[in-house]
Every structure is written in C-alpha cells, then in structure tokens.
Length: 174
Image 1: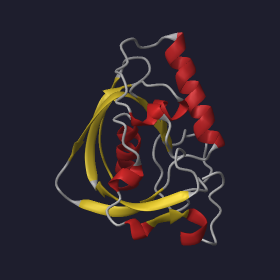
Image 2 (image 1 turned 90 degrees about the vertical axis):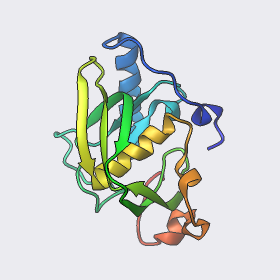
Image 3 (image 1 turned 45 degrees about the horizontal axis):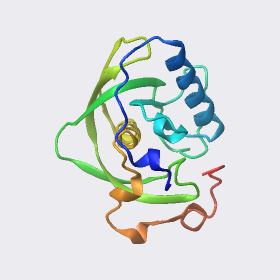
Image 4 (image 1 turned 60 degrees about the vertical axis):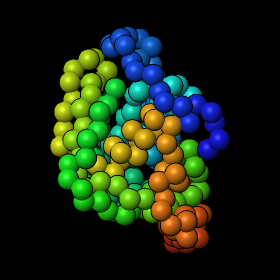
C-alpha cells in the first residue's frame, strides 16, 4: 500500500497471445501461489495493465490457507474485464490483500455479478457468478481502477491486523 501504481487506472491490453503477456501472467501466477493469494492483479506486481488472475487450477486441489472455508473458484485469466452487478443485494465479508499485508477488513460486495473480458489468447470470457467467486473478481478488478479494499470499508472498527482478529489462524505471508 502506498505504491503509486496501485492507485492508477490500468491501461487496457491491446495485443493478446504475446510472449510479454504470457510472461506477465506467469509472473502473476508465481506471486499469487507464493503468497497463497486467491487472486492477483497486474498492478500488484508493478504493471499497469488490465489483467487479473484468480482461482485455482484443477490440478491444484490444496486448500488455500488464507481462505480455508471459501468455495472453490476456477482458475481464470481475465483481461480488460467489465464487471456488472446483478441486482442490488450486497454482503459484508472479510478480505485481505497481498498489497496490504497482515491486515483484514470487512468489505461490502455485490452478491452476484456478471463479468466479461478475454483470456490471454483473446478468447472471450463471460460468466455469471455469486458468493466468494463474485467477491474475488470484484476485489481484483478494483485494483485495475486504483481501488484498494480499505477504501471500501464502511466501519473501520472492522479493519485491523489479521492476528488480532483471527489469533488462531495462520495467514502465511498475509
């Protein structure tokens, strides 16, 4: 938090299936796995492009230690995303972030969303999702608009150190 790239609106990706884009995605995957993240956005590794990845590959059946009770989210590369709420229903939930290590906060998010964009090859991605999947997408796509989750917290008494709110959980590098 405080890194200028995290506060900018990221630039759209104009070319798909390039070596540079594939390398960016690999760097994002490596960082997300190393930090036990549920997702990551390109600005979090210093690249101002509209690229997010989230979820787990089918070959990785391990439980994410940062979100042990969360529903599985399919591994997705999402480029130039457009996120649209479906209905007005919102839900409060605990969030953390690789860019705000050691902290957690309660953030309101839409319960159901539609998202569309492209994968790294330029193929369309179009889904209607709910629950934790919807929360992860909203959180990661916020990064593309220069928004960090603490900016969405409505009651700061529910923002603080992970080990204070959850003393019996190990959030790894969170």
